[in-house]
Image (cartoon, rainbow, N blue to C red; front, side, top):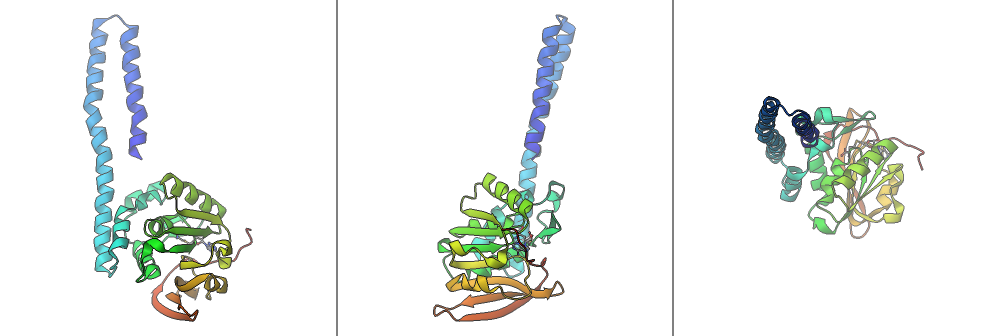
Length: 270
Ligand code: SAH
């Protein structure tokens, strides 16, 4: 961020110097110009190291976040590695980038939030389960900022993600494209209906809370598939729930831990 912000001012000052020394034949003013140039050159490494410091600071913050997630019980090393690599500060509003690596949710506009990193990590871990992640086709409901989709995308084969608020879907799509996540497909729509054309899914991650298990999503879950969903009618009473479909098609439901998500709303955007 700061790198692109600093470049134009250097270019501007350089062109000032050139114009200044060309316009006046006065050796004194060209000496002033010389000192000006010297000053600019001296300032350059400081600018560059500022950029480096930013990058290093975020990387260090990600490492301590990962240590925290490990201490909180996240065991899947691949998930921890991806959290350590994914620039969460680019998924939150610019004014919040300095707090992007705290283990808490943050607002992302439109009254929505990016989930707490621990929740992203545990949902990813649970959705993958004991399987080889690289083979899995996954569906996410509630794209939001696109952070959960980006984390999943580095682990699994494909991520299909649905967002009901068109503005959020558009900005997440652009953000993910810019980051080179080519295996993520974003769609505006009502997640209750799932994405039937692309079903079945080996894993479904629901990141908004429905009051009941959406049956279309259960239907779109592959045999042997796992869906992780924050289930509950009110924000004060939700449980992260694992819905598993056996190889024979039997469905089991296992509430795991109390959570707090924004509600999964019904819409008519298609
Ligand atoms: N996974 C997101 C955070 C999700 S917040 C991230 O990583 O940033 C929950 C999101 O679910 C919100 O953006 C909200 O608009 C969306 N949502 C709510 N109801 C929905 C529905 N029926 N279908 C799709 N998205 C929905």
